[in-house]
Image (cartoon, rainbow, N blue to C red; front, side):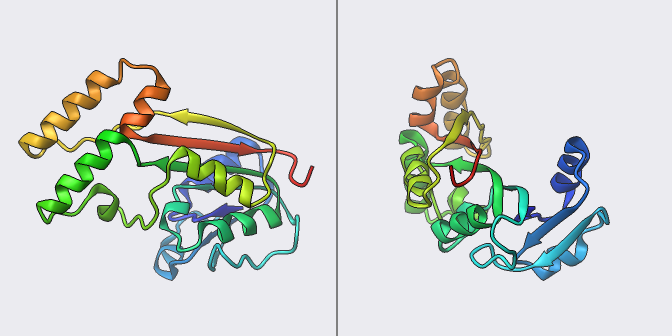
Length: 193
């Protein structure tokens, strides 16, 4: 099951890679589900905060770049955990010292921030993600921080921001994420144990 399947491309490719026999994708947007051209998956319009599946009915549930778009990420995470035996998440960490300053500057200039441009209503730190996992009673997980790069070189400040980001890429991951944020991959196994 992919929560927030969008076009279905990731679901199709992951299903082929894993050799899955049955694929289901859900998305809250009827327009997106209707445009899904991958017939290998069964697509459903529904809210991630109220999944229409029985407890532990899915072998594997994953969600990529969805929690930051939800009003209640904890409820969505609890629902994914409820229906799954194995869970994997990919969540952007968009809060870092320099990225926060950049977003504040853009707001002062009455420009949309990168978060607003992508429709994000949540802005997570790594601590926020760990708190969500604990609140959802997901205790056994592996977590990996990946670097993500934002290219904003349309203005002088954007060029400066991008240059600083590239220079900071030489720093260790933990320092880089505190400055810029990044992407956070959480893999949860053995649900309920």
